[in-house]
Length: 338
Image (tube, rainbow, N blue to C red; front, side):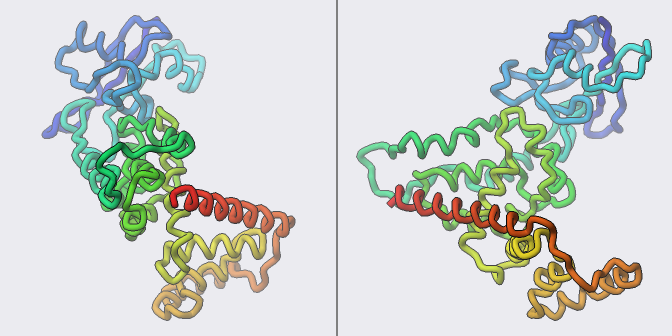
């Protein structure tokens, strides 16, 4: 069958333009197979990265039909099924573009320096300086090693970084790839700097609190690392060590949980006062809520009362069960390391 490949092409000093190439392909052909044929048979100037062709190296990450993916993993048949079917006899099109959140060097090749610099910023290496055992390697139990399995699958393809909405609006945010690697260090029983790492990852919106929980990193990760879930684990470690006066981000999370436990859902009247106004401790924060409060009252969106949701007791029981489970797990981890 014939398929049109609509490829966004550009150089550093030119505006991007789509160029279309038509190929006779089979459904099982990978997108990388098709790009190779375009380069070898039609246009040798087309630029893209590739290496292993086997979903191991992560080199061929690009945007395929609007989402970041590995060209060696995705095939023509699967991509065509994603397209809307409108009964048209027109040759189907597959759109290919460079990854996002990184400047384009040429065509589908992007400059990944910010990606690597942000990875380096979280110090993604196991530190054993505090353990003076030079005679032998640092052993782990099978259980300790199993905690690293999912995170260790990351191939640093950049797909999560490319789709990260937080990174798009906040250039200080290190990105989901870096924080997934950070969680690997936090979870590694051989590392000697867990506490200092957590302090570092707790810094404003540069670290874990910069994540907007949009789920895009989880959706596009080709190795099911689930970066957002790993960020959540770091947040939980921090929350266990900090009270609600440590920062607004921590107060936000703790207040959210407490209000849901109390009423089954969030009482928005109290949420702003407790988080932004720090329960009347932050006068400047309270004053900042004034304009919003006036608009809500004027539009009848500020309820005078708060009705608890149905099943509040069940919600509270579930939250407390999870908290107790996490607390017991943390104690067992601490005991196993001592």
